[in-house]
Length: 492
Figure 1 (cartoon, one colour):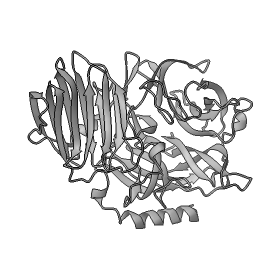
Figure 2 (cartoon, rainbow, N blue to C red):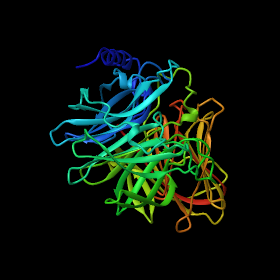
Figure 3 (tube, rainbow, N blue to C red):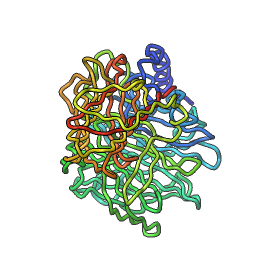
Figure 4 (tube, rainbow, N blue to C red):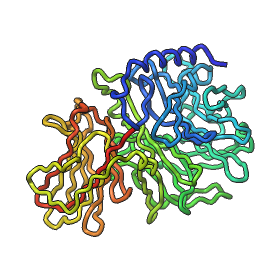
């Protein structure tokens, strides 16, 4: 049964979608129908299609009472919008239906597991208790479980927060047992990741605390994901309130991957290698799924909380998702590359080989556009001080990617990208040359840029608000560099 609140939200979205032209949206990065979106939720494969839900406030471009928006796709790139799946219409989630996950059950139902947030009992208007809840559906309509909530904070170790307990990620093992991880806060204010198990996905028991921030890696760890990959175990989290650590982690909200080993019998995870997931400006709260052909694919929110209050005038929606990324473990590190399905949208191959770049700005024939898959291979850096590649450029605007080999730095700079607020617009990414050079892959959509370094060793993401007629791509250098440029227009 569809509640009055959900019906109203669906009607509002349907009315306002028509006011946004296709050209005002990205070509292949998912946005909400209207209003605000943040975390990806319920990234899952159900009845032969990929489903993605997301934190959604359809009524304005600022964060508000969280709904679950919904879309589906056959390839994770071309999305069909579906009706809003959930609204905050129950007592246990009347402050918001916060982040969660999904999976297909053996009986054909689509299970959603999410955090219900209750309004504070002190009438302050703030959030109160957070609990883990369920909903069941058919891929379009969902009914909240009559036994909600199914996991409360009183299952956690003594002293754990009841107001910071959220973002469940559910999965099912081969023997049929269900597991879920959820983010929490211990009595000392450290983030902690709790593991639960269930035989029927309804009754849950606490297993262990898999990992803690221990005041070294921020406070609350949001949006955990926990999975096996290439013989190792990966824990992905999004820490709040971090202090900077060199160039790997900046102040505030971050994303990090812990790669290690997992003892399934003792429910003990041992993290060995730590790394940022994305080193750019706009990336948070990633979530992954396992595809039918065995790939682990991750998608993230392409926005940053520090920038989220600065919505450019005239924008009709705010927030988008990243391109889905295939994950691997290489030499103990997380590797991420755009999903291979993107190759199906490539147009004609444009190739310029062994060209020399110097102080004179260069434009290569047919290398331009705002929906582009481009790889730049830097072959010779012996005389190079700095290589500057500008995309989404004209006489006024540009977004710069600069490589400084002696410093081992790749810099992303969007000061001239149409985002006219005094916020974070530049980020340095530590990189290592390979075979005396560097390989950069650019995925450029109308309103975003994602850069992948050395076949996925590093990634950097940022949102753009540059006018679409700024479509030039230029190259210049301090010193000289020999490069290859391979470019495809992406046709959606």
